[in-house]
Image 1 (cartoon, rainbow, N blue to C red):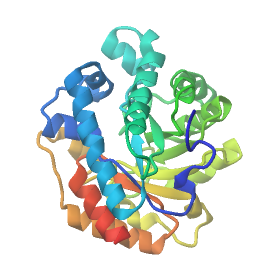
Image 2 (cartoon, rainbow, N blue to C red):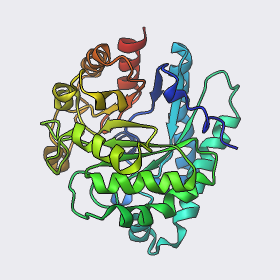
Image 3 (cartoon, helix red, strand yellow):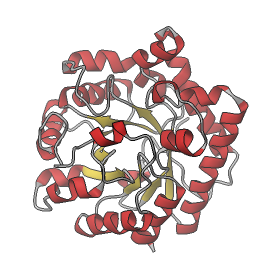
Length: 312
């Protein structure tokens, strides 16, 4: 049974840390070739499972040090039917791939002493490219498409799903509807360009308001991921009603644009301490932000810097 699905620590008002950029850690730190940047295949090898155990150990210890919860996310950002078909040759294994990823975290959590709250997040990604709105669906099409993965995650011990790196509203609406139908809380995490707007050009606040209007405010909360604080800090109007729906940040280590990151052959790790200070500056303005973590280029050093800046 899910431990926190009916009482998410992320909504308690207390800080919750997350892990960092799993895929970039695997590629650039561990030298693992991820097919189509999908991390779920690492669970098929003993060495991959051992790495993920060590990876999670660091973040759990960090959260314990600061006395806060740690959200552990599944290796399923690219485990929807299209990506599973591209990697495995058929979409038929989508449900099994997602259940395996959550079962791994649940088994890991069961072996710990329980002193640190660990909500399990089922990661959902966009159908297409996270940086380009290149496979636009209607809300109904998006709900039907994502239902396969979300229903599989809802049947596990996952406490919530988070749809990361979404770049247009209609897909976000579909994800929120599919999660509501499956009976699992959903966080919607948009990515933004260097001007703080979605890749479609839509202002972030307008996107959040549009999703809420189309779904009767179904998402549990909203987030920003895969962007640096310098990209979005300027659009977070503390007086705007939509800002209260924003509860999480998973920032990139790099200040580079999505286009530049796509072309980069080396990892830009940025400055962990500077990233922590910038996240602290945003949280000083928006103290209701509770979910604090990292995305591309971040690792345990960046999350430790964020924790030190925001929680010490």
